[in-house]
Length: 101
Length: 436
Image (tube, rainbow over all chains, first blue to last red; front, side, top):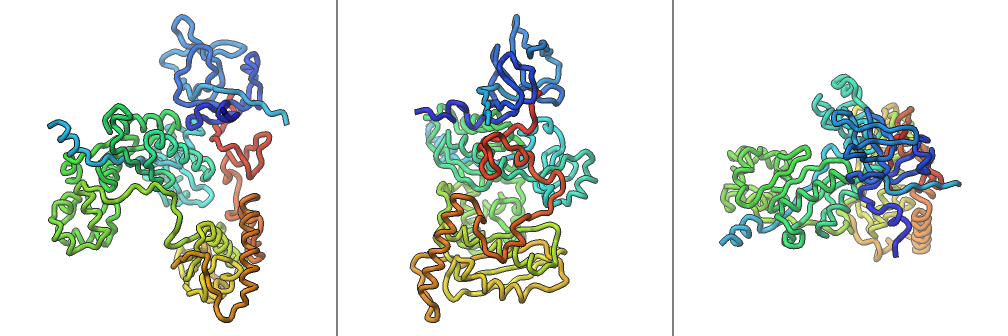
């Protein structure tokens, strides 16, 4: 039997909690104050939700690859990932959790 | 022929995994914007508990006063120690090691030994490949670095990892021992204390290699058993076991706690002492042990310590019973007008707790009642946490250990998710910034 925790947090050692503070992925169904489970050390694939560090600020975005070129997308726009830009993918989001009470 | 060679290179394969500036690295892992910046922890004690490698470059080391550290390293980030997150990372580090072998020794929160002997076929690779894979797993999944020393005995793995700091991998196979030891000062060898080092130096053994090359008969005249074990281990013979079992009994139990600001209030300092007594007794009872002898000491504002010891009439791990003894010792040591910064207790000469005989002058009924009382207290503690029930004298010390100013509480302690309480939080580290 799979426990609820194993299901939400499939790779426990590599996972950490991240609190969301933005509406940038509202279209994805991710809202401010949601908790997401981030997995470190995973190579992002097209359409993954990722936590990225851009100029020292952690952001939550969709990772997309269009014509082989990676970019970070939100509801409002896209940011191409140029090779020289100061962007680090911290991890890939495995699940979103929202408690109402 | 070739199998022979391998057997001689690796009669045993032991790895020492050592977290690099562990406390500071963990902070950088949960606060990614601190990567590459000089970071120290220990804000709540005003002393550097751990320094990141960026801070070490400025000469900031463990034990340096924060005030000095800030002067040595402008832009230093100073954080309180986040024990909760540290222990989560420590547990994960050991969980990753256990993917490779069940023979894991949790030597401390940030360094451990594992035995890989015989696992090459299972993991399809050389001992070096397996160790490097483990190191990679830790780096990638935890976002912190460790140094790994791989060798044929525990002492040699410590020599190896010391050479590899930080984030390195160093291998010393049985055939590489001589090269590895020639530049290692004898005082840097694990389990060689300053006195032994001085003794060996006096006999012309300034390096680990000079020591290891002396004949056994010669060395055994100078050293006792622990020293001889080090000599054997340096010569590639593994004699110190990997201690996989959790500790089930102790030689002695000690509890020392610093408090800030220092105090000359007698009731408060005694409360601090008795809190340590309660904590030490809890630990003793958990392992079903009781001390025959107790030691207490007070540390003064100027870091000088004074203390006393006493034999108990009967072994006991109940604060109600040993409290009077500590009261007497404390009254002798405490000097009014002196400010104290720490108290400590040591329970020693521990024996098994169960078959304890009352002395002639004791009422057995009282003893049974005390035992029942503490069974109940221990049960309550399991359910509701430490110190839900405590003796009245510790009341002045229950509230705060350190007078905190803003920023002295770890960030994780300040965030409560829905459904979390102060005592019960999710056992997963949290990235300590809301993502935008």
